[in-house]
Image (cartoon, rainbow, N blue to C red; front, side):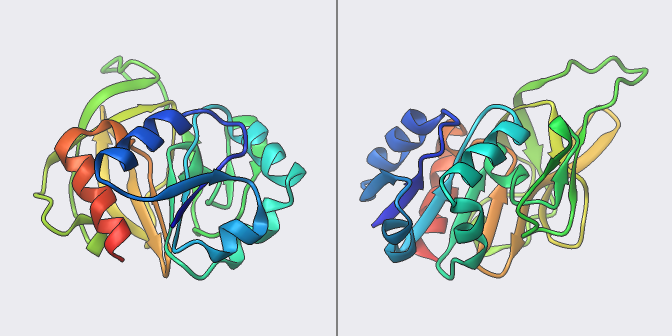
Length: 196
């Protein structure tokens, strides 16, 4: 059973629909014992990092998530709050990944912020991407992203800025993009995660 962590950050419905489509069993919960006993844990989310961390703390889940031993996948805000800190709201985050979340900077090529739409992932280095081709397109909606670091398992370039499209440290995984909105590529990534 997969636990989808509910901490009032939205996006749960699209994640639920994606899991239903691939026939996965799941439960939406903020209950510590259910999360600890799940085979896999999904930490989705959209919104603002400081608020997301406040919501986790109110439920005591900021202490729970870093101690989990099963595969954990953070999506969008989920991966951001698994980093050390975020420039969004000057949030101190969970510190699972040893990188910080940075805001996109305006540039001479006048990229639109937030990035909304399809972009590619390259330098794929994890079982999460088994069967996924280099340069595959995934769906992004964000103004902040994890900085490049040694735990990067996929990178993405937006304008002149390169950021970590996905991260992994041990049993912890995170994608800045939305696999649940990324078509057949995203479906394959979710299947790979469940197979871990």
